[in-house]
Figure 1 (cartoon, each protein chain N blue to C red):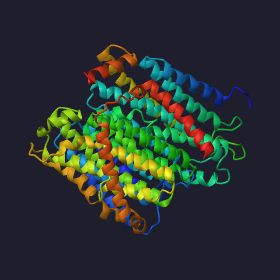
Figure 2: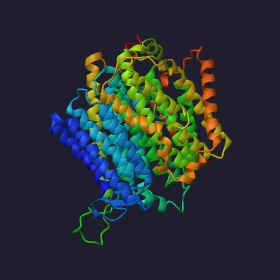
Figure 3: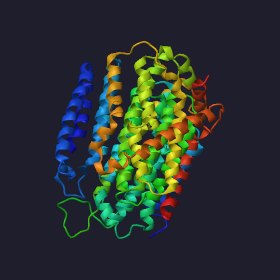
Figure 4: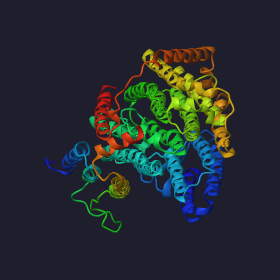
Length: 119
Length: 512
């Protein structure tokens, strides 16, 4: 197995996403990093179950040819849709916060909110 | 049939409540009646003792999504019904948009799905749906602290479920199936292969983020204390339990005993320590969700039949009294205009008597005073434990629980206050009555032979001693203000803690 394949790239991307989530203070960049993390899990799911010599899993293709497992495709589609929904809703809430505090800096927002709750 | 209908009904009602915005209250009441009928049919179907299994779409097992109902799931559906009824009663006179009721239906529907789920990916999708719905419910009032708490929840839960999906990918690569029963069968010959340990710790980490285990669910105190009372009651009483139920289902395929025992002890003890030094009522209740999840996780970690039965009893008991406590706390905080316990005590004359009685019942329940709900679960759990270390942990958690709830005692002076409306009182009765009558009702939950283990004189004496000791502990600690680190509840730190938690679980499953 080659050193650079889908799984290793997914692991690297996962790590980059995690670093982005932890180190960057900008909420929008945090959401992008979360997208990277979730995208890398999808890449991992696809490349683990990939089959280079397979054909598309359609019933009418000749039975002798090895075909690709169709289930991961279904899984990946659902996962992508879910991640899209999460990203969209999170962006709406970030927008509400930005309208009020005029910043996307997570630590400043957290600081101001803690200040408001315990005067 | 009922197994597939129960979730579906609510997704249908979710669409209806948007279409007919004028009758949302009546619609949700109707949906609960339908649920009750379906649960009745389900229990009749289960009375032969065999689990009901359905594979959706008529596929064969292993290809289609499997839903199954056993006694465990039946008990949980009853809990869903009770909590749902109480919350609907509590919200009867509130002015809410149809959108809120749509979210409630979606929440109930996904909870029912999780109760029956036996498919790793189905669990993933439903947990994500539950995350989205609770995210929207926590931020419903659009106050800045609610928005921030729910955003933090969404980020952490989404990260956790990403980790879970990695575990699913590995499992599917090696076993070629997502059905938990088939995974268990195919893992029989290699239970400790390195990839199994890696996958199971990924799965457990992901689910633990959703299920209120202390080092993973650091979003919980903020989210559960800032939501509206009805939402907090549902989140603490039901949604968190679904994570634990998934953990329980995972134990059928993986050997998770040691990780679950350590996690249970950690979350129980840390949650109790934080609760003792927290003086905000709703935040303290939220910390107690973390601590009481410790009992349930310990019971699942023990893995014996009595341990599981104790966990189940405690899931139901905790759902009831935590729901009641959150609803009553909501009334108390609203009428007194204070969230702090000393402030509430100073203004207790403004709090309706019914809310104070409800708080009392919930407090006695969670303290484990016999013969209420908390006592039954706790005594059954400790009857199932052999190891003295776990026994000590259980007693320590109980002591801390009593000590932290002792702060509320001055609230319970009997004096007349304003009256609350009848639907709110009805909500208190729906949850309070089963707490008081838990002992006779528990016969329906667990076989009589197991129940009799918890009904000796010894557990009675022990729990009374624990209550006394806890009150003493409170007297010792109450003069010492102590500041525990609050930084770990911030977003960045919470992510770091989750990652280190993953390595902890991996290490424990290698050792176990």
